[in-house]
Length: 187
Image (cartoon, rainbow, N blue to C red):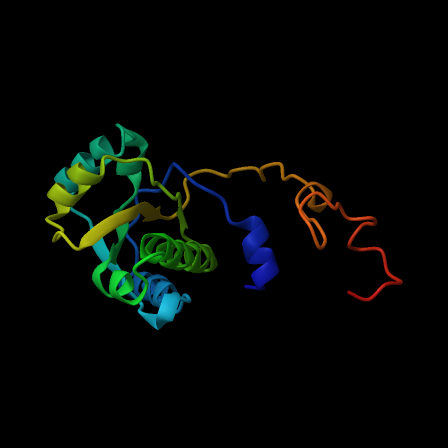
């Protein structure tokens, strides 16, 4: 799949078909996650795959009662092992842990889409409950729960704010003086 098309057509899906995911597809999705950039190349993400219906239900409850999640055949819980990053970056390590996981999650979402799968990035959850359900060690933090499956709905594209309202030049507040698709000027 063309990367631009993949970025523009990926959607957050909350209904899934009752169809199992082939192991090779799941492994390609996870492999895409490990190819994300990370601070100092620490690659500190960890994945917990959850297929057990009772565990999925417990996690949906820990995710602030988002029961729609249980329609997915499995969850990929993306976590970070915080130890190495905090040692390398004592001041900004906490932020870098989140950034590393975010890059990993985006790769997973895009590869899932390329595989004909869908997901929804869930980060609203009770951290302690998720840690307890998954028996995560102290140094491993859950960052995202990704219900994963074949899409059971078509989600229309969301509206986007135009670049003219988000891009500034040289200093914050200096808006674009022309549309980025207007030729004649080199950047």
